[in-house]
Amino acid sequence: MPPSPIVRYVATAVSILVTLHYIFSFSHEEYGRNMSLSRWVPGQSPRKQPIPSKYYPYTPVTEGTNTTTTTTIIRKANAAFVLLARNSDLPGVLESLKQLEDRFNKKFRYPFVFLNEEDFSEDFKKWTSEVTSTPCAYGKIPRDHWFQPDWIDEAKAAEYRLKLVEANIVYGDSVPYRNMCRFNSGFFFRHELLKNYDYYWRIEPGVKFFCDIDYDPFLLMQDEKKVYGFVVSLFEYTETILTLWDATKEFIQANPELLPAGNAMGFLSDDGGETYNHCHFWSNFEIADLNFWRGEAYMKFFDFLDRKGGFYYERWGDAPVHSIAAALFAHRDQIHFFEDIGYRHEPIQHCPQGKSHAKGKCWCSTSLNFDYEWLSCLSKFDALF
Image (cartoon, rainbow, N blue to C red; front, side, top):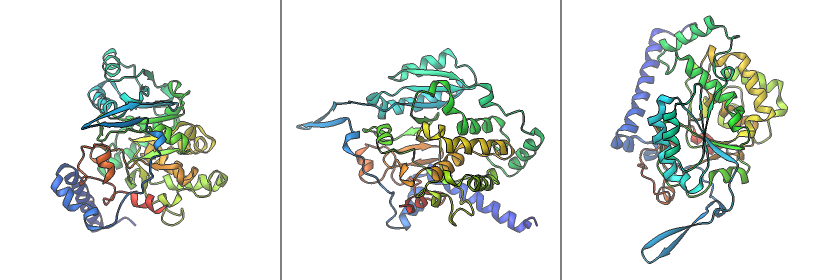
């Protein structure tokens, strides 16, 4: 039986109020400070994992009132930054690159891989290579890795896109957005330019990096055997993934041997896996193990989901797909919260707190921090430990 008009109106009103809350939280500092849950719930703090000194190749040397740094880089991970962009994204790309270079990469010098479904323009190559201190590679995405597959029933897909438009879901009618989600879910790690790398750090146009990063996150991932790193976690739109968890449960039932003991199922489900709580890691920032995606468990999982058609019949995003896979197919200790990396992707930001803020010389306001806001799932991640 469909919900009554009153129920629909109440649900719509709540949705609007929550949306307005987050818009004001992150655009008006005083409102964000006063309404933050951290103001009302004492003792909330991220699960912090101390960074071993071996990942800090820069040693401060103090002489009087002057502080200098000494470079002692001995080793690096086999890693690269990955940025999916169009030529029209150039201004936002340059903004992201410049901040990342200043805060991290001018010291560690990892290469960049740019991917596009079209050829990159000479201007794009010129300006991006000039703003970075390391080699840049520019790749075109194979057609069958990007565009909607021929076996998708377009009439069925179009019908559901219309439903999402009527529900005011962001990108509800966008086929290119669905192409991107499917590509990021199952194909980017297969690209020729990435095949020889082991780790990647995903960057998007127009993001902000607030803090100095004086250690090597790639080496931390490698040496500590981490497979997935994040800074923001939140709930996904229910309407975009109506059947994703049903498909996941079907896959689990057929492949129970792929789930290790001690995984992070508790991050995804509040009832042992019967239902999905819609928590996911925000994948516009992720530092992860490419070989985890290339492995048997994930490849089987993605192929299974792909044949279900949910990337087009609904609007399955790479964020919930990556998150479900990392939580199910890795041990929970292999997922890392980069608490000390300050980051913003509109309209949400993670701002390090306490000593981490001072140590990173961060320029974000500690009161504008999503970690324990209403739509954040960080507390569920903390509860795993």
